[in-house]
Length: 308
Ligand code: ZN
Image (spheres, rainbow, N blue to C red):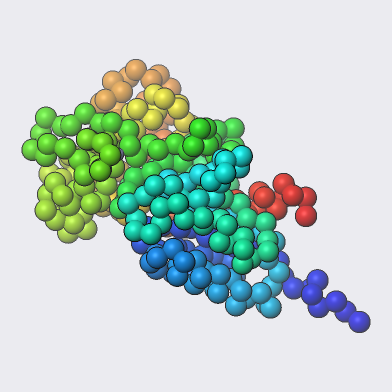
């Protein structure tokens, strides 16, 4: 008699946790996707219950190999920490100290890999997108917040906690009337002066409504280029990938490239920058799916590591 259980197709589950929505995907890689869904980010228990229900609904149709979770933070990703898998202090109501990994593990008996949303996106681009065949890259998202993931030697780096490139301090522009940024922790960090809500606080209009020739974009490119210059000098990545909603504004990427070349002032002598800035700083090849596919990549790594 055939064993129907072993004949089920096997999939990974990727979960990308964001401040406004959680994207879930059931897939093996970008060319083998079974299902995707989007779940609004409300209070943590309700949000996670919807995700768990979504996954369980398909349990009879396929076999889950492992789950990857790439989520917003700050997040404790140190496996030796007593707070491993918990969201740290955050301004998002109800999410501070929430044990997001523990909640999933309680309800879903599969290996679960965890990393930041931006490290997951960086990994997705490294495996299947604009960063293939590189040893190092940075993925920076510019949207409701700013965050960066770093791949070194083909692996996301964590360090003490994880990189927080959105909070690099940025010198204010002489052109700016805005005295300080909106980050509750710092004056004029990158997120505080160049995220979508920061643009809105400076100009009184949401970034989507600001026309392409508005001076807001000159200032935005200046601030992002200052942040990227610091990242280039500190990490020396082989490529920088810029994602997130703010980066969808036509012309912004080109302005950023011009600003970076001017700021670096020929100091970093490598043809990738001096001759090929268009392919050095570039959009994600996976579009809005970098984080989701990256979460699938996290799942595949833990699956392989466990040798199952
Ligand atoms: Zn800050």
